Length: 387
Ligand code: GDD
Ligand code: MN
Image (cartoon, rainbow, N blue to C red; front, side, top):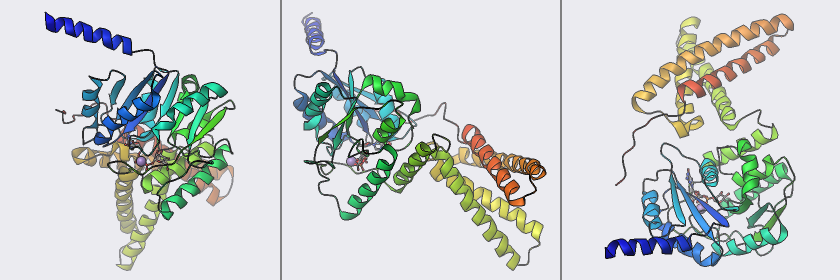
């Protein structure tokens, strides 16, 4: 009886603490287990009496960050975990976290303490006081800084920031920031336009807006990572370039298609190299051409599996089945290529033009079929159950 009573008492106590949140802090995580507890404490200290909730979006981290969050959430009901299985990606994690947020304002922040949680309160106060849509935590304004970065990383960041400013003008000094607050309705009005790929969610939100946004800033100094390691790598940078291309072409060239085309270009080089080598070995043209096509298709499949569709990478038996399907798809792509080129050559008597039109048609066909058939979104997968 006493136990039940204390349970009810406990529930009451919790109800009192659970005011509707003003701020929903969305934290994407991948292997950040040891940062979670200190982060919750630090955010709680920083926000004081401002009602908040924290949504950690964990992509099934091998270090089981999700179970740490769930465990802490039993004591701290303002904390929740959204665990995604079979998925990876910072942007999509942030978007999905923001979609379950209930706060008037959504704050996006990293888990590794590089973003100074002590400016959360000034950011929120500024947003309210100035009636801004977005407040950016900036490293590149008076009072901010990039901390202890080495020269290479600083130059990389500087370059990326310049590129980003090309896209959005000078609306903010730090468009590459992963630390910002946005009104929930502003986010909601753009959610269909946002790219699920890549790292640059703020840049995307700013560049996707159909109305001018009021953007304010609060400076902070970027800290060094508390624990664990950075997930930024060459692929992340490549994705960033592709996001820029997508936005500049108003969605005509999605990042995945850009990567797919680059792989296709490399495949062409592979094809010609094999063809010419076999010629040296005395093969006749037809045999050499058939072998070259085979090698190019296999190498394209492997590259696409590694890079273009790395979030849906096929392994084991699925890899073999995917390879066969991919070769089939490419054969139909070649037919589409020839068919369209034939039509084009009748319209304008220009070989290069007709060839190009055919090649584009083939690439678009291959890409659509590969995306919907070969590397389609997994429906059902078996993952090791966490203890
Ligand atoms: N859910 C999920 N899925 N989270 C991820 C993933 C993923 O695939 N990859 C990274 N994260 C989480 C990390 O756990 C961390 O909390 C946060 O996203 C940022 O990842 P880091 O790997 O620490 O990124 P960084 O420090 O190199 O880059 C940061 O600084 C850049 C500024 O130069 C990020 O904030 C960038 O957005 C920012 O542009
Ligand atoms: Mn980091």
